[in-house]
Image (cartoon, rainbow, N blue to C red; front, side, top):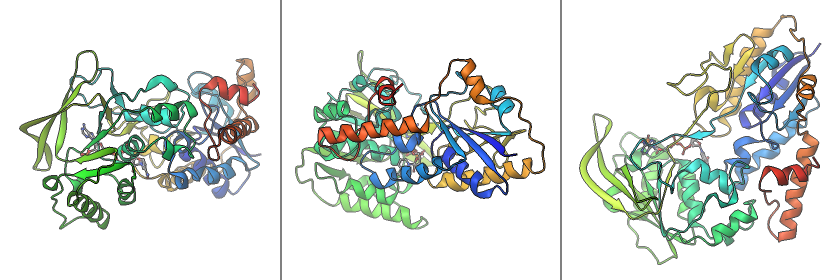
Length: 432
Ligand code: NAP
């Protein structure tokens, strides 16, 4: 009899978990990958920037896992809405939660709720065509925009804001979003770090890419590029060298400007009825802590995008720690026959590949726990779903969505794929 495992979430962590199960198990295993959206691949589809095609091609690897004979994709099935933890533990020998980190962290400053103050994750979802984000969610009508945070997500966001729509035409950005990017009034993008260049979280490859922008001058203030690099990694030294190189050159008059700023923390978002400015305070480190100096600066921005990290959300019926914002676990084990992998397990850190070793650890724990145990299955998820009138999106139907996206790209004379926007369009493409 096969070991039957349900994986909740079809992003990289979920699919690497399915792969690890197939590789590590000594006996037969059947895996169902449940996904709330009709589409698989999670952040690879809705988080990786559209112009990062080589990272996006990880989907080709994940696809091969979903196409393994003992792996099934069940789209449009949400834990808490369509199925409960009790359903899953009744139908499977084990359940692995891999729902990632779906929301943004907050700044906790006055004015954060003004219209125009938004999560970078929303903006990322928007240009990636996430079905939760309508095309009219963003109007880029402000000449100046601030992005808070200096991690790789911030770098993605400022790059998309700095590029022309023409530069993004060959990507899979939904056509409706591309039109709005073409109408963008943005001229100046400020990317703001609350510490120094040596503390920035972006990686060297991603930083260098900003220097290749043809539509924007990248500007760094020499006084903010000063950094102590005596005890830093090669990566960090590289970041600082690139920033100092930019600080030493003059802008050449490109249509847009990207100001990379350091030692400034946001203290208030100002505006009557919508964002009109951002107040920043200069900082320094006191015993390793970011401390305000009492010196302020106000930027006349019409939009503030906070890019200060993702965070996981609790799953109904699954333990969750509000202090770490993760599911408490021991090497992936949550409770008897319940496991966790990916960002939900360790927090939103690392690159996509980090989830592979993370998933492998969880699967080692799972297989060791279940070794020699009698199967505990009583119910069949297909029956449970059918009784509730839930008909999952099949892998074949997902392929129809992909085919419709390729056809749309051809009809528009764009690249390999143009994302369909909204669940209704996907449903139609899937023939549902
Ligand atoms: P991140 O790397 O953790 O960066 C978050 C940034 O926000 C840091 O600069 C942090 O500064 C800043 N921050 C946090 N709280 C703040 C506050 N209250 N005020 C001002 N600044 C604040 O997060 P991320 O950019 O969301 O990336 C998440 C993960 O995805 C990372 O592992 C990243 O490498 C990965 N990713 C990779 C790629 C790629 O490989 N191309 C693309 C996108 C994302 P402090 O350091 O001072 O806290």
